[in-house]
Image (cartoon, rainbow, N blue to C red):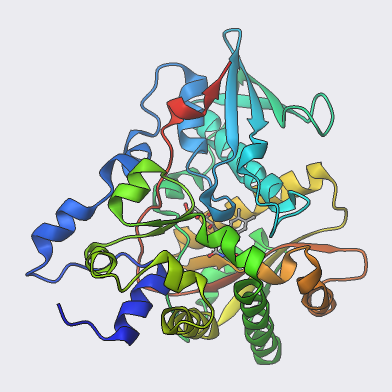
Length: 368
Ligand SMILES: Cc1cc2nc3c(=O)[nH]c(=O)nc-3n(C[C@H](O)[C@H](O)[C@H](O)COP(=O)(O)O)c2cc1C
């Protein structure tokens, strides 16, 4: 198969699922990592209302798709939620701030799923303080369905290039109230394109932070099905290139390789296509504030999904390791008042649709 290097890298960098060409159709069908996607199909298929809500909650967005949540069923109507520290990202998320945001996304999704069944999820956050469980939840009757819940199956992080047009006024009216801010003015959009790329470049050229991603990269169906988390490179074309030795872990890891440089170029051009950005900010930066930021982000992404708008977090400039400190200060200067924390920053715009990302089966996340 003849594939140009440029095209090949576009496939890797985007994490895109390639639309099947007619000749490749059969191969495409066999390369879908079916078992890793089953949780999207079986969400809600449980009699125990706690398991039903959990089966939706595991579809939450979360950093590097680590899926750090664990659930312990307590008695007949309670559930205790833990965060598995072995799934931390110590290089890029040294204070577990982003992991905690992911837990907030999970808890909001749990709440919505329970509400859809007429239940209220009464949550006590960090009942034993910071080192213990993230939440104790009791399900009681009286929940009111949330109109955003229906968009959960179609919410996916979209890393492709976005169209240049801004979200329509009608879409803005739906998504803006869910964000701290939607940035559309040319001057700040331009500043953010530059800043987010510089931050990405720092992450990719700082060995230990880049290796954190490389070590979590799953190349192709069999690696994805063996470990349905992390960063997946999938699709028929990508698999062919992996087999041909044109997509390699070593090449992706080495900043001197042309494979790496083309990937960087592709990521940059996707990021540079961004017409608008969204933020979620908090005035404090405690664990409960971070949980709240996750809840808000999940709601924002669902609201965008309801309007056919794509989103992708771009977290590099918000990360708290020394090499990013200058950009961390700049992004706060640009987007926040003194004392505020920008918890989430993401791209917003119209793009081709992408499919779901892998998940561990719910049963593997149940403990106790
Ligand atoms: C706190 C947080 C930070 C994230 N940062 C990034 C990021 O910098 N770049 C990116 O492409 N995705 C980022 N994501 C999205 C996750 O990679 C994504 O949610 C995960 O891979 C699961 O995929 P899904 O959202 O399509 O279900 C972030 C998500 C969260 C919750």
